Structure formats: structure tokens, C-alpha cells
Amino acid sequence: MTQSTSGGGGGRGNGRGHGYGHYHHHSALCCLSGAPPLPGDAPPTPEPATAAAPAQAQGAAAVAVEGVLHKWTNYGRGWRERWFSLRDGVLSYSKIRAGGVAGARPPEEDGEVRLIGARISGTRRTDKPAGVVYLKEGKDENIEQEALTRNGFSSSRHGNFSEYSTTESDEFEKQDDCELTCEDEPTFFDSVDHFIGSENSSSAMLSGQAVVGTQKQDSNNMSPQFRRRTKLPEPTEKEKGISLWSIIKDSVGKDLTRVCLPVYFNEPLSSLQKCFEDLEYSYLLDQAYQYGKMGNSLMRILKVAAFAVSGYASSVARPCKPFNPLLGETYEADYPDRGVRFFAEKVSHHPMLIACHCEGKGWKFWGDSNLKSKFWGQSIQVDPVGILTVEFDDGETFQWSKVTTTIHNLILGKLYCSHHGTMHIKGNRQYSCKLKFKEPSLLDRNPHLVQGFVEDNVGNKASFLIGKWDESMYYSNLDTFRVKSANQLQGASLLWEKNKPAPDPTRYNLSSFAITLNELTPGLQEKLPPTDSRLRPDQRHLENGEYEKANVEKLRLEQRQRMSTKLQDNGWKPRWFEQDSGDGTYHYKGGYWETREAGGWDGCLDIFGEFSET
Image 1 (cartoon, one colour):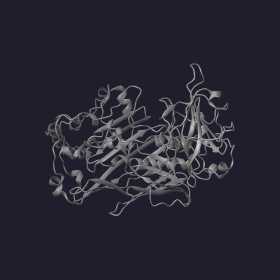
Image 2: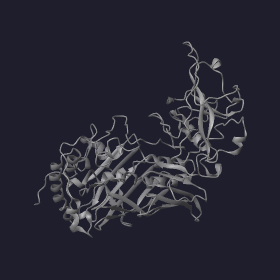
Image 3: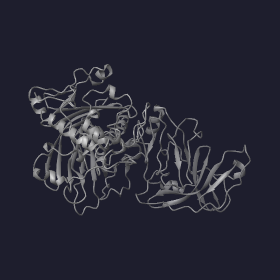
Image 4: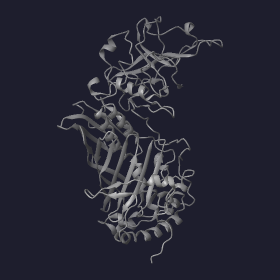
């Protein structure tokens, strides 16, 4: 039986120690000690309840839940039985000693009690509990930051850069009556269900970590005005099967950006929209901003590193390529539920360059991207060229470039992609980061591995990172943090975890977030410029499953695209970005959102409309 409650009272007079959101408790509260079990470990199954208190008459005290559950203690002692009690929104637990249970109270004193867990013997004593969890929904940013600071996010507090201790102290096991206050330990939580705050709450708890500044956002977003869609439209036509090899066999060694493929090999997204898909986990930058405000520069760069890796998570099992945008094509994304506003434009046709700019909660993100690809028969190698930059409001910046991507088994075998190479995240202040994306091999037992470290200005290693780019990232400051498997993470703390897959990903295997990118929400079309990717007809037909119409439109637009080189040679300039005369990168020059508000799209070309070659 699973029972859920939102914490009510039970707080201390000073208002400290409150978790944020709702608490879900299960028969195995495996992380109440703050030490997550290794992946694959399972708690012992409690024996069924053998007794239950008789029902009380109406008007009696509220029903409490008490009993024996197995609690994770540490890696040496494993799962141990503890007596748990849930009363009036306060969850407490205590050790079971010979002759009694600390903190247990008879049902006749406190109203109806439901017993759970294993049979216990002996008389109950009213000793102080070994641990008490106070749960209360919080919406005050000052309380949140105070709690985070108190829970030891600074390296000087715990000696490791972790939000919680990864083992239970020996003194705790030796002392029978040791009350854990919130000044001593962080808020406890369940490892299976994480805290989900209310819509107005600015924080939540995520997999053993107190989240700074904002909650982990589910990809199925809910804005104040409307709910975003959760699946694509049902296709109106049956899809045709075409051999990729029959089309690209004459293109070995060539740049595939110049090879025209039928629409059946595309997904209903443009490369501009794919740029925004890299910001699915933008809440990591929100957290990084908050850590910097609190003076924790190390946690800031760790969150930035996790963000840099998270952009690859959605590339797993994505068999189709995005549409190449037309010269001057744009894409906007205004997600107030996430606190981000994104804009991108194709600024050059040859070489193909895409520039983007995003504003978040206390940070800005921008960059330009050029892909150089080579086809080698059985695989395609894609080398991104360009620099990505994150700048926080306090002036701290981080810059990095993406690693190489290879798409394997184009002819025979299961199609898959890999990301490999070294990513250098350079900061302008105290810390920088180096991440190594492991190249796959035939005997590789741990694919998608990412390992790295953070170092300060003088080269001292401050923290280590490990994870998988398609699953999660962890960190630790232990010098002995050397593991060959991302599943062996003793002493490591979670930085980022991939969202759950979409319930209906379709053959494109889109994430829940990606499914929303091409959506025309109510009232949006009237506000968009004629250059926005959502208005591209071949892409819209493909999304609707109108494959024949999509193919006809794609051929028409590609014919128009061939005129782009001539247009660019005649002095065409991007409208919303300008090129830096020094390093040649493109920067947003402003004005898009102001023009959108005024509805002044008179100067924008109808790049998707009919055209004449004369």
C-alpha cells in the first residue's frame, strides 16, 4: 500500500528544516539516511502486518501509520529494521532495541493506528526518536536559500562537495537517543519518488539533492495559459519504406549537408528547433545561478558541466535527421513555465551557420554552430564547429564546444549514434572543467560513459564527475573516486538525471519536450514572423503524416534554397544577429521580441511562399 501526504504542521518554532513539496512514502524508505543504495540494490520486503488497531469512533484522533520498515543505513550495514511513525504530517523513525521500540506510542493514547511491517516484540517505550522528518510546503526563497546553506553545500561544511553525507556515522549507530535536528542533517526523502513542489513553489528535491532556485521540470510542461501537447498528430497516410543506401551510395566521402534526401528520412523538427532542444534541462543553469549567488562557485560549474552533457540525452535512438533551415529562417520559443525565452536564425547558407540566443533566470546562453560531416559508407561523422557561451548576471562566463558525433550502421545493423571526444569548459574566474566522452568499442561494457574533473586556476583538482550522457551525471570530491563503471558510484552525488521518455514517442522517438517544439499553441500563429520554422509547409505536412505533400513541398523549398547562395553573395545580411569583426562569431543584436510585441513583420521575407527565378 502506498500512501501520500502533504506535510502539515510539525515544524519547529524557528521555521527550519522544512522540505518543499509533497512527500511519498513506500514500504522501503531507502534513502532516509541520505545514502542512496547502489543501482540494482533492493530492500528486503517487509513481512505483512500481523495486527491492526480496531477502528475508532468518529471524532477520534487522526489515523496514524506505524510499523517496521527497512531503512538503508550504510554500505557496511546495509538495510536495517527501523520503527516508523507517520502522525499529523510528521514522519519519525527510531531504532528497534531489545525490549522495546523507541518513539512508539500505544494506539489507545493517540487514536487509530495502522500497523505496517514486521512483527515486533516487547513493550513500547516513549524514548526520543532517532530521527524526525518535518515536511512543509515552502514558497519563500529566503527560507529556501537558508536551508540550502545550512545543509552543507559549501565544501568547508562536510569536507566533500555533496549535499548530504553518503554514510551514516558510527556515533549515530552507537547512540540510542540521538535526535537529528535539521542543523545536523539535511531533509530526508524517498529515493523512488522525489519531491514535486506546487506550481508556485520555486524549489523541489531531486534524487538526494536539494535543488537550488528551481525545481526539476517535467518535460510535459504546463504553462499558465495552456497545456502543451503530449503527442504528435495521428498520421493520415501510411509511411513508405525507402533504402537509405540506394540514395547515398554515390556520396561516400562527401559533405552530407549538400545531399538531398527524401522527406521520409527527416523528423518533423528543424535544426533551429534542435538547438532549443539542447536547453531541455535549462533548470540546471537556474541552479548554477543560485549557487553562484550563494558564493558556491564549485557547484556552479558542476551544474554547468551537467547542462553541457544533458544536451546529448535526447539523441538516443533518433533515427531521422532534422530539416535544414532556409536562409533567414527563424525559430522562437517562449516558455514562461520554464522561465526561458529562446530565439535562433540561420545566418549563413555556405557555410551553413545557425546562431541562437536564450535568456533565463539570471543567465544568458548564446552560440553559433556549423556542422562538418563526412560519409564513410557504414557511418557518418559530424564535427560541430562553434563556441557555446553561458553568462551569468554577476559576470561569470563559461565557454565550450561540442564533441564529435558518429552515426553508425547506416547499411547493416541497428542504427545508433555515439558522442566522443574531449569537452573543455573554460571559466573566466576560479574554475574550469574537462570532460572525456568515451569512444565506443566492440568490447565496451559501459557505453556512453563520460568522466572528467573540475580544476582551479592553479591546476588543483577540486571535484570529479562521472556518468552517462544518456542517463545521468554524478560528482564527488574524493581523490579515490576512480571507477570503471557508471553503475559503481559509491560516494558520488547526483547532478542531473534524464527525464522519463514520452508515453507516445512515435517512430521518431521524440522526447516529451521535443514533441512540444513544433506545436502551434492557441494564438501563436498570429504573432509569428513568416520566417518561423513552425510555418514551414513540408515540416508541417510531415508532422501530420501527409508524406506525399511533404515530399512535394520539400523539393520546392530545396529549389528555392539553391538560390540562397546567390542571395548571400549579393549582400544579404541576417536581420537579428550580427557578426563580430574580431572572432567572427554571431551575436544577437536585439529587437526581435520588441518587434513581435508591436507586430511589425513588414520587413520579413516570406521564405516559405511561392517564388519566381526571374
